[in-house]
Image (cartoon, rainbow, N blue to C red):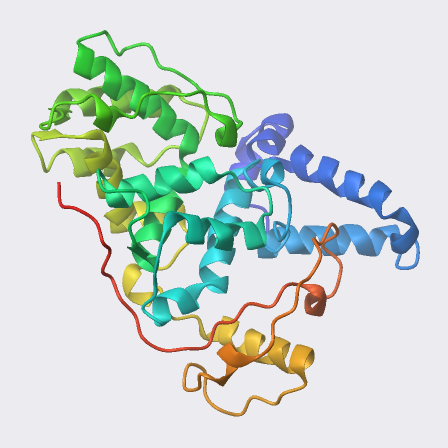
Length: 333
């Protein structure tokens, strides 16, 4: 069924908005790269399975970072995959460092930049040392904001700096799409007064940014809701408020609400099937009621360059365990 939006937009504009050409170029590239294997299945089947994987969000598994961050759909798919694969960290109540979370990210994207992981950790830890421990939920929601809205946040940082120094922030800075290679900038928390900037003026600048930026931005009404509750705030205080806002999380649509973060029954069933295929062990106990799966031997899988390869070739993740925590070793601002 065609969406009303598709019928209301000119063809080229709709294709650009949905990044259809990005996926067509990637599909053709993979077709040429794997043409000998694909010839056994047929080109039509390859394109069918490729776009099914795009629709399901599995097309980003083990892909390079430049592809992971190429479109909003790719970013949302990566966030959802990271959550589903590593829920066990939250279930177990484990607290990890930024480097440890980065290792988990690299299991899904080998060249994922450490810079983005550090920026997400800084939202949680504020002025604490970067080797402090963080809960899975705290890191995940901060990472969601930093990763999905990375270009927006870079422009926000520039506006915040201008407000601190008394400069005119009306000029919107639009960064490049290479979010993993941002230019160096002094962190706002390193030079800002403790009371931050005036919230109403800050929102006025951000409203203009949201209207003019071609990159993904949080809904301006929700940004206004965040800023209307305070008179002044710091840069990282603003980012933490975005990360904790239920409305922004729902608008983005990649992750469940915090109360449902450790629940994913369909994934539990799929993982039981996967573990049975890989290890030959029959799992008869209910999901989350046994810790035996954590002791199963792991295996190393190569990067999957083509989305039509069977599920059992993909990397196995240990997921079944109990317990949860929302505590993070960070300071209060």
